[in-house]
Image (cartoon, rainbow, N blue to C red; front, side):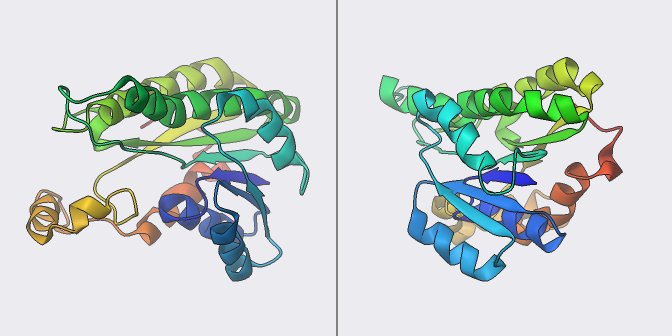
Length: 230
């Protein structure tokens, strides 16, 4: 069974589709129930939905209980919920900083923390985070986002060190520019999108379906000896 946060759109939605298509039972989590119900209509009985604000730090333990109700405690968790406030170093606000670090970094760790005991009991689990180019390179006007994604990469290594001996692998997918709601401002500027594409080896930006193989690899026994990578 898999749990996917941020499942209403973008890469979370795509991860839920890929996992369900491969035979997994999936619980999709997001704030907007209407969008989740649309995804449920597309996937069918393999998906159950939980509308929940994963950024609320006080309700993560409650969320861990909710995601277990439809199919049991998850063996796989994909942390796809995220935010980019797009504030430069001079413009970063305390509110924007806290919102970004809470959703992008605190939530993946603590939700995993609540779900790991059941994975440990089974001796098998997979935690998949979403890192970024900004885990390794600083971009202008996106300071808090870059800090959070740098933290995701280090958190991924740390949880792998802590939990992999129990059969629980943790890895992160470090993305370039993918066409999602979060990157809409980038793709709204054709010249900027083209420059980004030119900097890739294959000469194009990513589309959501490009993550299917990576998600399925990291969520399966095919990646049994892969952990702590981003």
